[in-house]
Length: 482
Image: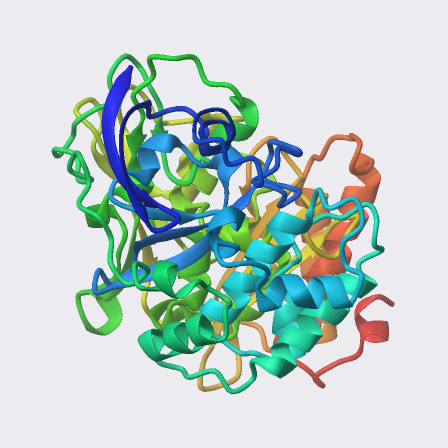
């Protein structure tokens, strides 16, 4: 079904009648004639199709820019937003980012180069550190089969040095980048405002998508399975609804909760000061979850609804005692996250119901997350696990929660393992007992990521890693694994 859409593309206002379910990548190449955005994996894994997406920020007070894999981005999501492709960046010739890649011989066949250029341009534009580590991390989601990555890394480090003194204030930083040619001045002049959408982003309360069409957060799971959606779908874009993208504290005292709307992204979650107050240090685990451009678009609610038994965010939220608020004309209720899963890829969601809000107890908790995968970054876990607890005035562990993924058909809470620690002071014997309990509590299967016995052994080792992370110096790895 065609729908009126209004957005800005490379600085120019575009008004079209478009298929809102169509991947932006296909529209850019086939309709807009912008072939610099490359088609690679169509799964968001390679970064060849990256473009810069301008949208309203979490607070609703201004605009933010994120890298977006256009193979996973619906054309309907552009309504009221703005997009910049590599052609827009190069409007006045090679930019400093492109020149750095050239100087370091970081482009050979050139297929990945547009995506790398977009990722590094976003690094210079975004908030955050400008050090070498951040520069290299910004291209973690960009694959290259030619250069061996060392030259791309050198270009990233050179840019971090050359632009180390950028202003912190966004308008001033953007002006500085425009003055140095990272963004053409005419383009930069359009990057601090969004166009009016052709249709409202906020859906009527309880309104279902038409014709059984999906409700989409970031689309980063759905479009992997539906690479060429059938015409006629009319998705509900939950991730574009400002009323569903919020992080707020509700209530006070011991009963206070942290509420996260369905549109909250993975990047929003880890960047939130309120989330970091609930689980101090949780931001250290962000790099273990997907790539920068996936974290910028994927939503927590979508990660849960996808019902993967090894979803990283689900494991974390289970250990943080999350509850879900469901809304819909046929199903409106609140339930613990653990009760959401009925079986492999089966959930309680029915009809037009969506996950509207995720609720977390606001009291601070010690938190640890561990993950075993074939690669340290950018990989699906074979096994993951999270543990949270509080320590009382006498030094005993209280309110222990242990979660695990990849060891059953659904993400699990490990009650026996938690009980082995509850009320005890941290010690090697207590954690060894919890490790054995965890292994006995699960029933994994063997698949391409590991055998059932391997998963059980790994789960025990990850429990030991929790102990060493949460109580450094209290005992040694040798004591735990004796």
